[in-house]
Length: 259
Length: 355
Image (cartoon, rainbow over all chains, first blue to last red):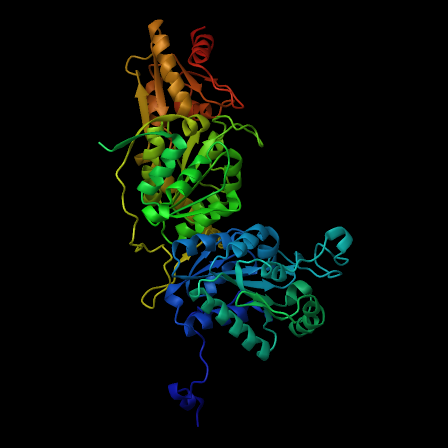
């Protein structure tokens, strides 16, 4: 039997979502961005809301997200994605709106916009990729860089006394009355990918409820920035990032999860 | 005749926004323009027209809310005063780069820094030369009355959508705060059609995705984009120059002034003419594009020009460029919130141009 004989519609078990373009990803091999792009786009397709969705790209490695996501998108200045999303959602309350931001964008330069959008209870979804580093500019210290962690601007490791502490933005926004769903996920194993997709799906479904902002942090690797192989970076992430940024739901249906 | 009202300039901007069918106003308080948002809040525009009103956490957030709304084809605006406009400059550069329409009102106060809350025209360079990073221009309208504060909101949106470009209404603390009679234009309904190919409405199966961005990492494409912007600005220069002349027909000397300075110079022209000096006034209404061609024509028969501005001499550079050495050009202006009187302008005219 030739391979061509099995390529038939009835044998199809998986297909790339039409919400991704054919363009080759600009991300480094091993990076989590591609997986989160796919999950987000699959969710839109499965919920059949692509035609009603407007995305907001930010500044960082995912600045070109609109090249890979086959949906209507705008590209916001550094840190301002949630402000732009506020402008869209307020004018189009029936549309599904989301931002896609990294930790430098969301938790450093965009702190004010993030906190106030969350606190106002803007009814959109935030996808927040936290890899503890500025990837696109070449691996500088981020607001989320762990104590002792090396980067190009902390070549001897982050010294908390001099450089301050890493910020847990997700725990912080969970405290605000305007957030309805706050969760932290990862995409480094098939099981985690499935959990992350479920979280992203909830975050979009929540927009129908009109009860506030849904915030999904994905703790991700940055093998290039961390100067590791993809496999080593995932192990390092499990051993170092997850203890500081524990995975799981932090706020569900507007209530903080007690552990 | 439309409805007549006695209003502050800032209030006229707000009322005009509702009447012009604006979809959203995003603002942040700053003196001397806070009445814009206060008036809107009192009017409850969502009840009158469905217009969105939101007080943002900063001027930066407000302009980026405008950016988001404008990305979808909505008529969005913001207003502020000088220090707040500086904060908006990043967003305005992005709006210009992404070719999005919007109206930004600057009720100028004295600077630099926190400066003063009193009127000034010290933001001329910032408004007309770009202001933010990169090669771009806003189309700049300079109202000299409360009537124009109202009219230019409507005109501003027409021009912003015609050219897909940010429009700035460059006002000042005098025009924003003073009360005058204003004839309000009849309300026009908010737009419900968002059919243009740049407007983000959600990708349907029958069309390609739409992207709003100011980014292109391919330098050749970025240069092409810049050249397209230049061509757009050239069209503005050809089609949108607006100015007003006062007693220019037989003038030997000319005042060039905009906004509140033009109102002051109008009085000086009268006083000077009573003294026998043939003086006229040219009031640029668009500061970008600038009425350079007209000034150049007039310069052939003028003995001198006085550029009168509430700053240390900013617009005078455009006057000199326009005149190109044909006649003498001098500057006069108070600064830091001080306002020249018609008599002080007259003294400057006598000192700089008659002596």
